[in-house]
Length: 220
Image (cartoon, rainbow, N blue to C red; front, side, top):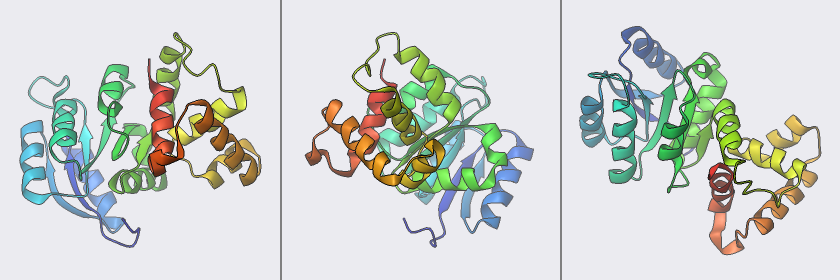
């Protein structure tokens, strides 16, 4: 979606203070919060009723405060493919992140709650997810990478290519990767082309190649 459009958002967060804080933040950023709820069942009802572009979902919500939000997010990803899901978590929970991301290469995000304090980063991630992209917290990437290295599925990539792929997983554009790694955009494009080739992601995979590469990066 275009950045000038007002995103329609559903928020699911059991903490009233945090929920109201996110509502105010999004409204200040020209988003329309169509519903703000405190549990998974209410989230699913709100999505069915309002069909937002994206949901912001806490992992742990009533009644057990374990994985209610995550389970509701998985239902949304299965039943409402056009609705993006951005999950917020207090900590990196690898099983939840892998379950959420696996099998569907777009319209998903997993950020730590601390990232909400960085308004620009949070809104940028939310817009990417609403537009069918991915927004993955750098800390989530790091921990999933440590686990994935047990099988070393990316041994075919050079260290620099792995750096580029890590930045891709964080949602950075080519220009953002170039800035972060202090290289030219041309060099970034060459690295990405090599990554696609080495991971056997054919040109026919289209624009999803970038996210498919990220998924391979996260596989165990």
